[in-house]
Image (cartoon, rainbow, N blue to C red; front, side):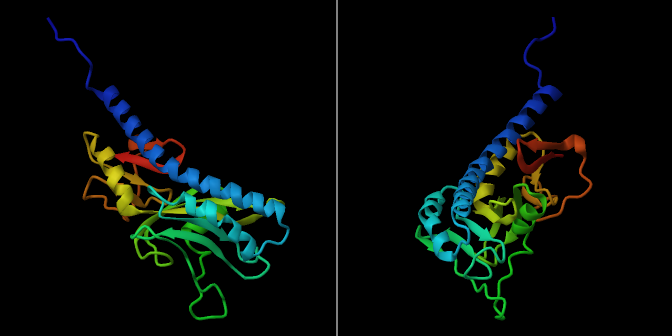
Length: 236
């Protein structure tokens, strides 16, 4: 008589992959929730203040500081150049230090100086601006903030007239993300990795695809959505 039981064939594997993709999506949805709360706070301020200034953006500080913790090590609003009445550019940005203290990010944002930090070319700013969608950028070395290998999750912010006003964003150290994502990927019976919309590997269980690598010509049949998160799970 043939043995009976639950099949461990392709259907079971599909369920496992879908479960891991869902879990990975959930990890980053919690970070995007902080980004969304920041976006709403900025939008409400812009709706109320016709010509915002850095002083008025400072009203966001208590809410931004409260978002720090868990995976979120940096959070804030990055203004589009020309948005504010008193400075050419600005980041209302707060960071969680290794000693658990919270500090603001202070950059030279005067285009007339040699130390000027032009953030408009970075993917975490350009992708939400150009696509109108939330984005995950990295891993990259975050020379503006921490010098850490990081991911940035960002969403566009629009003013009362619908024009682009900047981005709301949150930073995650790659090592923190890997500490929770890689065990989930290892639950699969085969090598797997995550890629962002640019094809950049974010986390991996195979030496053939290391974080930071560009993964090209991916097999659509082996690529799986992580919910609505702009990451894809790829299985070997």
